[in-house]
Image (cartoon, rainbow, N blue to C red):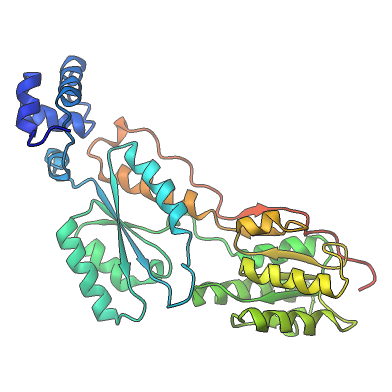
Length: 342
């Protein structure tokens, strides 16, 4: 790439104004096809890469979307598949000339420190929109800070499309297969999500008159050794769960290991379903089912909604994609009807 090339050089080479170049790189419809072609040819010939400042000249936009996420505690995994979100969001944004900027609020920050850090970033980046990822999607203080500066704020769920309850949905699915003795092992990285999943699971079982939700529940996330011990304690007695819901994929794999050691067949003797998906679930034997939120698709949809709000002429943009279903079931071989003997 040539060094020192500016927007003025491109304008001179294309015989147009600086504003016309800015409109072209910002995909404005207010440019004739002939002028657009000359500008694009000049950009290619000069090897010019437009800066964010140049891109924001028309309409006063930064064409940046800020993504606020929390770092996991030391030794833990991220709460969301950030790599998948990055790929999906970048694809949605780059098609319309936008960029993503990720801001991590470290675990353990006080509310005042988190607010101060975000305020500094908002002032420096001047984003056109912001996305609060869990657990900050429930933080009204951060949302008020963002919206108080006139910046649109989104989460993975549109206000008109509240999140589903994976715990409730998984329990409903298993009850539909005839299971009544359904266990639940917590493990979500967001404690609020675990509370929601547990409440939904218990609500469904209580409605069907099952008492399993009072006996086969681990309300706090056990480590691997504790999960193995818990699974043995549940699966050895005569009265045992015929199905188990786990919030973490690793917990489902641990239960599968114990079931094999006890000569229990999955799914004939025990059905398993996880509330997060992982490649390991699809490759183990038998493959384990997962019912989870398609976070990457939801994130791309949130980006699309922010871009549509930021654009001065949204009628000239492609329609944002339909919001994906909140829950996605990977129905694999670990699910079967309840055995009649239990």
